[in-house]
Length: 425
Image (tube, rainbow, N blue to C red; front, side, top):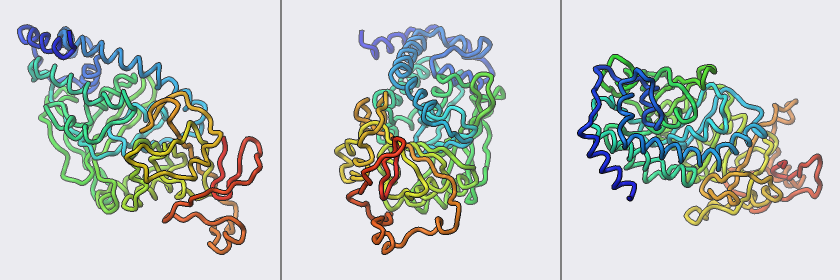
C-alpha cells in the first residue's frame, strides 16, 4: 500500500483513539524527540501520543533515513573532521545554511557556539498537546517532506523551503533544528526567541509555549531585521553548547543594518562552513559578509560555491583540496574558476558526497586555514601590481578572477607552491 494512503488510513483510526491531553505543555527536549521519531520522557504529556500508528511509522521512517545517512555520509564526515579539522575553535559560523545543523555538528562537533543564518523564518511550534491527532500527523508528514532534499542531495532547496516552512502550526526552521538536535543525541536545556538591535545586541522574547511547563502563549520577538532563536543544549553529559539560528538578509546594506554583522564581529576566531550557497559570495552585493568571514575565520571549509579563490590573500592562507572540481552545475556555469581546476590537480579523495555536485566522486571541498601573523612590517605590505609583475607574482585582484595560475614545478614535503595561491595536499 502506498505510504501516503497508509498514513491517511491510520490517521483516521487515530481520531477515534485520541490520547488524553495534559494541561501543561511539553518541554522543548520532549517536543524535539517526539518530532524526531524518538520517545519523549515517560512523564511527558506527549508520551501517550507515541502509541499512534502514524507516529510509529514516522519513527521507523526517520530511523531508516538517519541510519542511511550515518552509514553513507555522516560517519565519513566525522572521520574527515577528526583527520583534517584538528585546529578547532569555540565559534562555528555557517552562513546561507538554512536549518542545516546536521552538517554543522558533524564537521565541527565541539564548538561552544554555533551561528547559522538564512532567509528561512524561525517559525514556531505550538503546544502539540493542543492539536488533534489528524493535525499532528499532517505536521509529521510535512516535516518529512521538508527534509527530503537534505537527505537526498545534502542541501536544502530554497524555493521548496519557502512554501514548506510557512504552513501549519509547526512551521519554520525550528522543527527541523529540533529533529537534528534530537537525532544527533543532543539534550535541549533552554530555548528563547531573540532578535538583534542595530548594534548587534540581544532582545529576548518570551519562550515558546512548547518549551516550558507554564504553557505561555507563543509570542514573537521584537521587530528586527535579524530575528532568531537561541538554543542551549548538551551532547549527553558533555558541556553546554549554544546554537543560534538567525533569519536575516546577508546582502550588503541589510547585513549591516540588521545588527547581524555587529553581532558576528563580537565573536572570537571562528571555523566557518559554506556549502551549496548559490554562489552568492561570488557576487558584488555580498562583499560585506564575505569580508567578515575572511577576517573572522581561522578556518574556512567550503565547496566551490563559497568565497572565490581570488579573494583569499595568498600569504595569509594555506589550502588543502579534497575531491574533484568539475566546475559548477549547469545553472551556475558562469562561476567556473580556472584556479580551482589547477588547485584540485592531485587533490585528496573524499569518501562522501556534498554540495551541488552531491555524488560521491564529483564533490569538492576546499580547506583554507589562516597562517599565523606576519613577523615584520614588511610582510604586512602587499606588493604593488608593478612589483608583483616584476617578480612574476601578480597581486590577486578581488575585482577580476585570474584565468590562469602559474605554478612552480617543485614540490616540498607534499606541497606545490603556486605563485599566486600556495596550497598543499
